[in-house]
Image 1: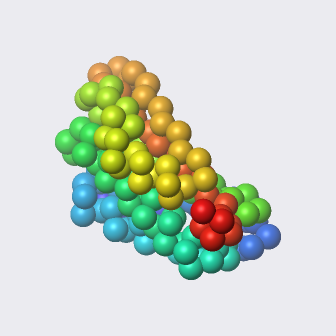
Image 2: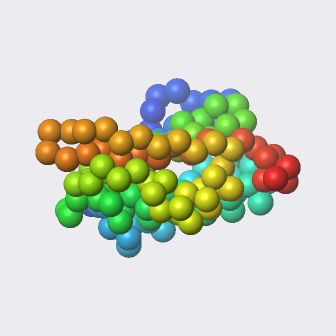
Length: 143
């Protein structure tokens, strides 16, 4: 199951924001990773920044897929501003454990993105765990 939906507001670059929903399965992570890299490329990120976006989204999705409830979905939202790509990823999970509990993965995420935040909120029968990544054009060379 895959579903892609674009928002109505086109930006000057011609790139639109997008919401993607796939099965919360490790086999779906490369799809999201490629989607993120394509968006970064269309926003004129340099090659290093595109690879950073690709790796950061891969790491965030992989972290959340491991926490996801069986047969659930992985949601990924791409929001575009002039020189910024904001990626929000979330899953439904049984455990309230935050993604930063996996210190190695969290360190990789914080090294690859301009900013990384996490959120865990209780839902009726579990928890929604989310990660938000923000990356700006040209920042890969500055790091």
